[in-house]
Image (cartoon, rainbow, N blue to C red):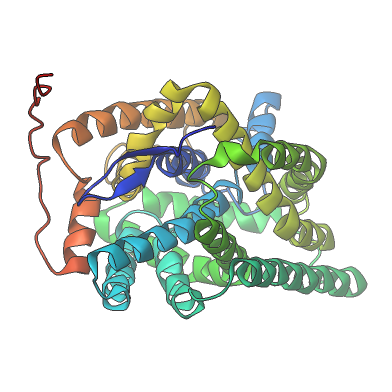
Length: 410
């Protein structure tokens, strides 16, 4: 029989190492997507940058969209819902009131997200998580089956909405694609702003935040809330405490990812890059509400099986997952320095493949730095601050020394 996958945690609790490792993996997937939006202002417009139209460039964008975009933030959303149940359990063990602490937590998360969106990256996800966390709070008493059904219903409803939008566009012919010339003119202005002064960068980012808000609420919001609910159900069943009990189910998820998730991801990538603002993109978006959660689930299943076979790999990813908020913010700090006028101003200057290489290198550094930091500290810097606000206390900054205790004589 396998043993529960736990590691030492704070305040006498036990952390689930698999959850931390999965969170670390999701963090890399989010970085692989976000860095492309720093590197090129053409991302998401449906128009390819004429400076990078080679075969390698096109395939890099297509693979990034098919395999990463809208997948890893959903995996992270699932883990948010799962961790929500762990927080409830921890509060119950301490005999503490959960609701006030959680409300302060989401308030702090929203404030951090707002600063992140304005000063670093308009594609911030923290504010959305905080808002959806408020919806999760009254749903915490749902039975696992009910939570899973409600999550599935949300995805089906979103699929129907986007499908009928596609039908409407198909019949009316409006919109009928993106104007490349008009888009390129706009991008030239945006690139100049992001390579400009501090005030120019902030003004442009505020404009982008307003445009991004509609996408977050309309497209990412329903899917993220659904994954919150799936995570809530899984957390109540403690599925990740001993995941190898469900080997057969994990393998079926891998098959589902190959059969449903990958084709849906390919269509999403193809439509987004070549048929933006057409009926095909709406149909692809509708399918994505089903395909991306399935592919995210298959990533989870594959990672769990791989972590079980290679425990050292799980141990490598887990520290980054324990410091997910710190690492997420520091990724944006790095990218803002490299690609905007805060530093090197290289937006629009680097091809897609080198950008992906930078993401890999940056995450490798974060893996090493997270492991090093947690040798001496209980929390990452951002986690320490958020915890302090949530608990209205000053958390321990450094990890207490561990002294070897000699075995009792026999």
